[in-house]
Image 1 (tube, rainbow, N blue to C red):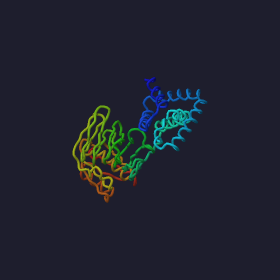
Image 2 (cartoon, one colour; image 1 turned 90 degrees about the horizontal axis):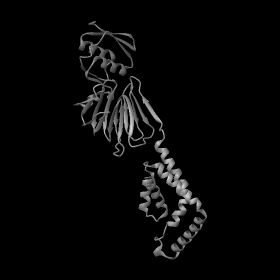
Image 3 (cartoon, rainbow, N blue to C red; image 1 turned 120 degrees about the vertical axis):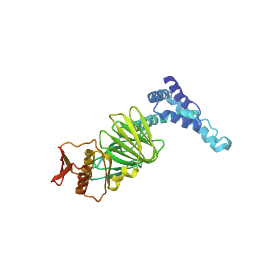
Length: 329
């Protein structure tokens, strides 16, 4: 393999080449496969050229004189010149530049790109446009890590918490969201990811198509479909859904469907930026569905839960500390 590569590189500089052949060579040369062997072949040619530098200068002078004569006196042969000698001289002049350019291109591809961490505290949301044009809206208590420049074969970001993604389409460079041990892959689409709970990751597709995968299996998600992943079970559960429920937080509403009290209280904590302390044990086997409008106050939300469950009450330690009391204990 190494000898074949060296022969190909040497053959390029020592024979006449069409424009198509030149373009084909640089496509082959700049491809990362067998990079070391290609660079070694250039160094070998460079050393060979150095040994014959005086003769090359004479050849180059004769080639340039011939070129001038043909362009001036023979319009029919103006475009029929042989480039063998000129290629040799060009190789002598340009090889150091090519070596530098190759090394620079390799460094650009492999360097550590600076990353950005965008975070939201409780009671706030934030929108950002990524370097590729993708827009992301982060929910409260979330963080998104992404590079300042997307290099490589895909556009990869890491999410903690919840976010809504509107992906800028690029079929050659898929967009990937990493959440725990999941990879959510999209080309051009719109979807929501809720990963607040370590035991459950919920992905809802609004438009387009996405693939969700872990180390063992994958699933293709359709529009208006929600996939729940339970890391402990290593399984995906897909169900049809009203997308507006999953994205209600973007308008300031708070909607819970078939959700435990512990998760509901965690959502209220993030929404109002406060601490909810529970005295006693909540029965999280029971699931509740409740919808809060943006205009409803914290007290109104708590009153709804007290009436709905029938076994809890609450009081305020201070304006940022609510205590939930289990009256069954």
